[in-house]
Image 1 (cartoon, rainbow, N blue to C red):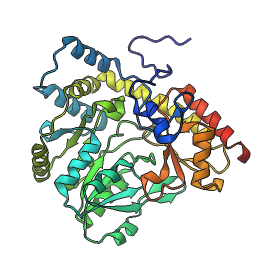
Image 2 (cartoon, helix red, strand yellow):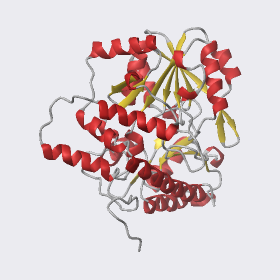
Image 3 (cartoon, helix red, strand yellow):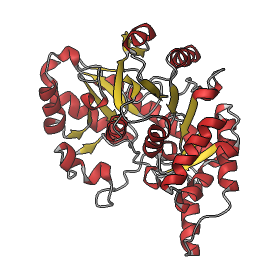
Image 4 (cartoon, rainbow, N blue to C red):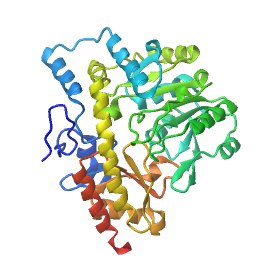
Length: 397
């Protein structure tokens, strides 16, 4: 029996989340047709793990104090962000360049409003996180999908093809780094290619790096801010939410070093009267600590173990292939070679296996034959999901 101390991360305990207003658990029947009574939710991108004890203690202390007035003096919060980025990513951030938004979907929407006009094109390398489509289109902008190429089991960026697609109406590029849903951790060469592409077409780069801490052992995330020459057209978006399973606090960072871009973004925030919640600032300050860093290291070792179990089982099903996962905790699984159409694949996963997943076509061009599975859950649940998938596709084996 493994003994744990109060500060040892516990990722194996099955925590009951049903009936707790969890979108992932309590809404999966509404959205996926899978009952929470015996279904496995592997769709919404949050984790079934508690955050570090430092975060839980900060919330308890705040609640015990019992007065929840306006938050003042955010120096500790900003210092924690700067410490984390320098320590974990080698990126020196000026505290004066940090804006706090209501999460990064909100941050994306703010960038669309601040840096583009109705009718402008916003470029994305697809498939990509589905919420971006909703935000861009709701703002009256045009989504410009640049489908990624495949090199074996990895996505690649075909800049020659993308150059030919540009019309001059495009004003912004939204980059997902590490990539969701494909799990790529982009190389320095690839990020430099993104910058050169943006320069050729005079695009502002909004780099969504919410998964920047969630990379597999042996992989290295490179912030776009560390690519020489990017600063004058770059908006960085980071958050503690994915890293520490704090999505419900809706607190993200938009970090802008260029003075003109910073002025334009600040004007839009001021016009909308936006400010973050106090709980979020307390939780981020408590997360971005040495204890939090040790917790993340343990988390990624655990998720890597889940990944290996999932890939071994899923890839044993003829015609099914899980893309090698370099970053995030989201497996991107291709069902093309089963010969089945999407309706049949979905029926087997949702009805037979009783697993709630994200449909690949919601991520844009190139995602049609895929399904996305969330692996950030106790290992016993991953093992059960693999067993159910093998049963659901047993006729192929």
